[in-house]
Each structure stands twice: as C-alpha cells, then as structure tokens.
Image: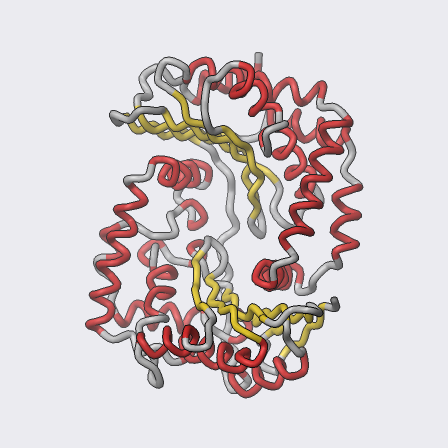
Length: 420
C-alpha cells in the first residue's frame, strides 16, 4: 500500500492510499474549521453548519442526498471536532465518483434554507439537552473549559443553547466564507481507489475554488482550574486533566504510552489497583489527547459519594508511584498495545482515510508506518518515568466533578497531595 499526495494550484490537498483486495472505499473532505476556529459569538456554528450540509443543495434535496448514497448501498456522515469538520462516505469501488460528487455538492452548494435552519436548530437543541443529561459526556466539556478557560479550545463543540438559538443564514454563510477555502480542505481516500482518477475528479470538482486567507486559531494555553456541580446522581463523576504534548511535540508518543500503562486497559495500574483490588469503581481509564499546539492527559472514573475520597487519593498516589517504579514490562506492554491498535485500526479504509487527512493537516505529509512504529519503539522506560514525574508534580491540572460531590476533594487538596 502506497500513500500518494497532490496539491491543486489553488492549494486544495489530496491524499490517497490504494488497499489491494478491497471492493470498497472511504472518501471524504476534512476541513480545518472546528470549534476552536470560532469567535466567541460563533460558538457552535461549525457543528450547526455540519448539520445543514445534509439539508439540501442547489442540485439535491435532503432526501436526494441520502438516497444518492444509500441507493448504491453506501453510507454518508459527518462530524465536528475542535480542529476539523469532516464529511465522508463509504461506497463500493464503482461508486467513488458518485460519493465525491455528493460530498462536493454539500460542501460547495448548500442552500441553507430558512425553514430547514429552524428544523435543524431544534434537532441540535435536543442534542445539547441530551449531552447535558449524560454525566460522562458533559463532564469532559467542563474539564475542557477549566483546562483552557476563556479560550476557543475550551468551548464546547455543540455550543450553548442561547447561541444556537440565535444563528441565522447570514451567520452560517459568513463562517463558510471565512473557513471553507481550498487551502483549508483535504480530500482523503483509502481502499479501492486510483490516485490519478481521484486527482482528476478533485480538479473538476474543487479546482475552480479561489484561494482565500486562512484565519489562524489562537494559540492555546493550558491554565487549569476546578468545576464541581452538585446533583442527585448515583455516582460522582470524577475527571482530572494535565497539560501534555501536542501532535507536533516529540513527547507525544511518551504521553500516549504513559496513559496506556497508567489506565489504558485491564492490565493498567489504575484498573488493577482501583477496580480489581479495591472495587471502588466500575469504570476508570486514562488517555492522552492532543491538538496542534497542546494536549491533555485525562483520567476519568465514576464512583459513589462515600468512595470518592479514597478513589481520588489512590489515583494521585498511583500517578506519583509511576514516576519512580514504572517497569520495563509495563512500558513494553503499552508500546505493543499502541502499535497493535494502530495497525488493527488501519485495516479499515475509513480509519486510514481519517488518519491520512489528520496527518496532512498537521505535517503536510503522511509519515510512513515504519517511521511511526520506530518513534513508538524509541520511547524508553526512563522517558515514561520522566513524563510521569512531570504529571505527578508540576504539570498544570484541571478538575471536574459532577454528582453528589460534597465529600470529593478540591483541586487545592489534590495539588497538596501531589506535592507531599
């Protein structure tokens, strides 16, 4: 399998990978316009626009968009994150031109009908309400806000209800004009695809677009802080985050290996000590997330009001212990898990297309799998211990608590425990 790239004269980028033996392909356009690219009064509009893309174009109604793909047995979808909005489809090999035409149509020719805006506004307000009713969803939005207060990266993807209730056709059109230029778009395709054919189709569909200046997202600064929301729930939802490397930082793989060893699976330290040995929770995990210029190592657990003091204390103790006695065997296991997860994921053309698009956005190239595996293997036990020491002692920290939180420790108390 060979990754190939191309850039049109207007800056529109294309990346493909042919996967022998597949009869289907995943194709999509990733736009560098997510929640962190919004102004404060636009919070939620990137996600709103993603919804509106499927509500009709100058050539197709909303039903015709769905039927065009589903009539050939494929599926089409989209998502909004903090750094991208993606529109993608999975189809059989012969239907790749159709999928590209539909995706180009919804990107370049949205009608933004006033009646449809009102319908979709109601859908999104219901989505916001559902998120607010899901504690282990909303707590991560609160944690993000505490980590990056008063910053675009700290705002929710869905946006607040009052903003969503006010967006109009002009607001959506303005966001398109600001962020949907050819230099902000990456066409990524994997599976049963031919690179030269994809380039020709992309030239026909997107080559006429006029370049426009990109609006650069504000640099994020991890500040840290605490939010606790008391509510009569069965469990306290507990989440902490620490400043970590961004995608471009050499330590990104160290952070991911550390998070895996600490709380990435059933053999991890937090799972074994807090769930298996002590029975303090059902769910506990650690993960290392990254953005272009910053990152967060996050730990989450849910437990009863009576057990939250013990859970929080043991979590910090395990973080501190990892700085001194993280073993070669644990690091080796985490490295293998990371490589296996990467390679297994890349058996899916959809995962492969998404990964290529993200790497093009970050590096303007797709590092080879060999290069990535080498960087994972290069992480030593000493590297992980050094990273663990920073997390356990000096890294800025954010805390979010939701539920019966009266007995839960404060951020200041956790900081004291880290320093002890």
